Image 1 (cartoon, rainbow, N blue to C red):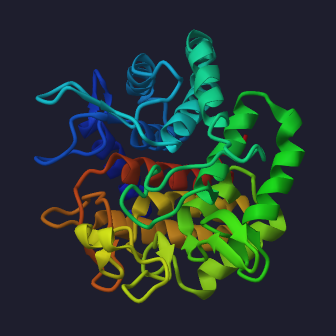
Image 2: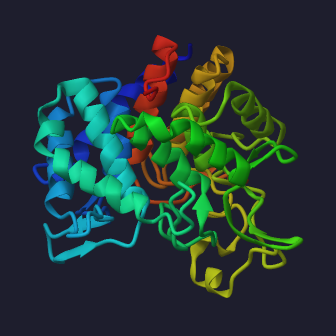
Length: 371
């Protein structure tokens, strides 16, 4: 295996060290980096990093504590705790923050023991209950509002989304509520799996006779999480990964976050997209390459026992993380797939944590996220 793979591992650890604080893990570094703890960013980063090394135990602990401390009365885990510098702001309005918090607690327990889980047991239960109460249709599938997960400005999706279901499934398992799993999986497949497309639809809401309120673009993170967390069957995983290969969604680096890009002529276009960087195809959330998603993709290849593909994708991911706007080893937020240039902020924690997840998966030939 090319030496860049191992060099990237060392550089990823350095990047995470640069954003580790007594308050928890900040989402990014550099002059314009975040000085706050984001639920999804910190949990994704530290779940990934801790699959490979124990050195981030302290900041993992601090991140979980910060999020738990600011849980709402209703049980929702905050999207962002931004109280440590000039601003004094705690934001909510997300569904995935609560789910990533539960998963963070689970993987912390798995790696470092049950003390933290026991300490926060009531908060974990309350967070899961809050998510369960988002089930407006009483069909076991939590529903989400538009722009209320990591894709916070683009594209437009709501109702039952694959990203939420792919996180809710392992959260149910982590909490030990296995009885509803068979019925839940049946519902997910009935509502979101599309045999003709060969993957889970990004979102679905209501059907109106012959008209279906849904999206058909490929949600990379949602489908890949379905594989690594076990929601997808082996047959479905093969179909999803084959689609990724056929459409070159993980090229030139893993991986583009939606396919195909949405244009102003697309059915799903909304006027407010014009206020976002994603208004351009292949830009930002509109088909841009996000390395943290690439980390999950490598783990999905390992889960599917596609080891050669996983090794190749890991090397490509290392090359992506080496790119930078000003410096090499930027672990940048996102990369333009046509220009092959880093376009976002540097030292993104989840780009580094995602790489360590991928590295561990390939080196051990084992999916670290299996519950």
